[in-house]
Image 1 (tube, rainbow, N blue to C red):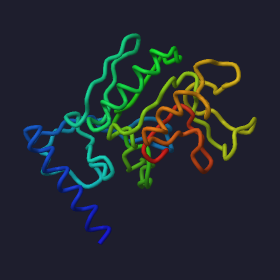
Image 2 (image 1 turned 60 degrees about the vertical axis):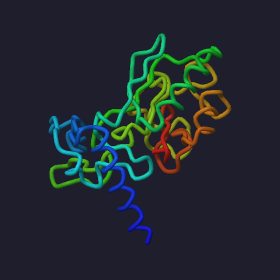
Image 3 (image 1 turned 45 degrees about the vertical axis):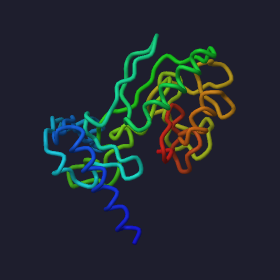
Image 4 (image 1 turned 180 degrees about the horizontal axis):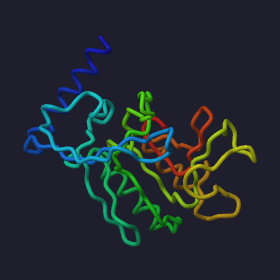
Length: 211
């Protein structure tokens, strides 16, 4: 029954999207190669919505990897970014409120299609779309809130692999659990990457699942 409901949700999302967007989907795809540690196989995709595969649609939000399912957000003092249309009003309102309160925000990254998760194929390519690919993940102040590996708990053993160092006690752009930015997005239903379970900590990152 659960699998049936997931398939039904995907079909409904595709049907609504095809009606709303003239049945055409556009996005730029690429894979992260774990052997070469770089982006490979960059390509532009144009296809009918009816031809989208289940992995191209996020079951929780209904947003797909298509540009047409994203909404551009423009805020004073920040480069524009795009986010899943379902969450765009909430994200915009939260950020406007936080900036108005004087919170330090200098960058926001949301929609960015790429296969950085999931299984690895014979060539060393990741095959699964990230949450950013659907516009349901947000990175805030990446230069001050890095992604760390070997980090079940934060400490000197953690290895910074992306973004800038996380220094919440010294850097006003670094996020922390009791800060207004983390509270605002967790209250809205997002999970903070600084509290994900496992060997990674992603202090810039918010998503529906935390990953």
